[in-house]
Picture 1 (tube, rainbow, N blue to C red):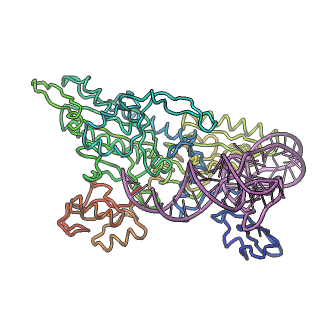
Picture 2: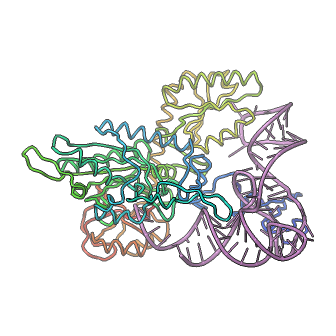
Length: 541
RNA sequence: CGGGGUGUGGCGCAGUCCGGUAGCGCACCUGCUUUGGGAGCAGGGUGUCGGAGGUUCGAAUCCUCUCACCCCGACCA
């Protein structure tokens, strides 16, 4: 929506006289030169009907929602907290799945599928696990509906006679049902390791939801492995964290901080949780993936034992690790700008779009034919290339539309280009525009995509570096988070109560204890006790 | 569960104070002219005014109840 702003008006006055603009509270008139303009605006001061994206600096949260709507990634559904992922959004998720899945397979994992519904009793078996998830579970209590009439209207109710003997929980995560199964599969050390991944939907009944970042239902992968030794379990946990780091940085162009979660933030049932943390453009942190060392907790809860080579019987060692559709929220917030979505080429659904330009039917036939030929030649090299042949839309409209949707590269092809055997190549993120000869395109386009990928990573990295500081005093700390926020590296005593007190006072949390950190001596920024080293603080999504 | 706000065509809104049988922009459809950064003209279709009840000759508008969604908290990450 386009806003009225001072550069476009000489006088703007809230309607008051009444006669000219009868009965409208949100109408304004604008005197400019010798003309009187009349505008109707909505609550936000936007002139009706001109769809544009809220500026980041004006309202970051609204900008985020506008980008998702403008790029047609997802929209709200009739189900509270659940979104509909539209084809443009799902194409990104499919690329995420394909890339991660290939990597998992490379490392020896296989896919399997476990039920959506979990017997209620399973969740209760691991004490910390049940405590962590009990408050956000959806429960299936009946298996049949019954038609009935209320106030003369036909409706349906759960049939009281179909009440389940044991109720089911819609999975918030699958550890319990998987470990119940692993018990049957594992007897000897020869059965280990088990390296299974599942692509699935899960449900957590959150009180407040935001598109992609926290939805009631979301999509993810959850890896669940079983090992013969503690070391092997820990190695697997760290290996998968490294996969996530690689994926975030190399594929999504999103720099992350790898580290260990504090005890307070640990996964319910884990011995140790590791995370990758990214910084969004509003300086808030977002946990982009987690990997858990579950120790023997689930093996003990589900009685999963094996006999080792010496004949000794022992509980197995476990890990679990996941990345969800939440990462798409991070992807959107990391790179996008006030013109809409910006995507790194390696994850974009459509890598490039060709916009043919013509004046008449004859030219249209010629440029469209040439565009098709170019696209056919480029697809094997770069992936999906779309030719936008829609008539009744002028090129300028198409440029704007593809920019909103985040297609990394646009190729403009008009009669003059055709005559010169070239296209105009334009990058989405910086609008850098250059002519490229047809003959050079097969090398120039992949090179341009590499440049874009690298630019996006470097820009995000620079933004994070500039918003990361080392702080020494509580005053500096509170000042930072009452203002612009960001990442801060501060000394911390290691005490959970102290951590909690910091959160209650400032809403700032320890994101993780970074692997690479300054371990020089110091005192806790909050309580002044001896420090365990500097840890990463930030306000978080 | 508190505090605030909004429900009117696909989307964004006006109309509600002061009751008179629903309107604007965008989008959509048709035609013509256009097409190198958001085209123009002409014609056209689109509504149980969130729901229920009440007052009234007459309700989007007044009254009562109710439902849904959004924002700020609480919760969670």
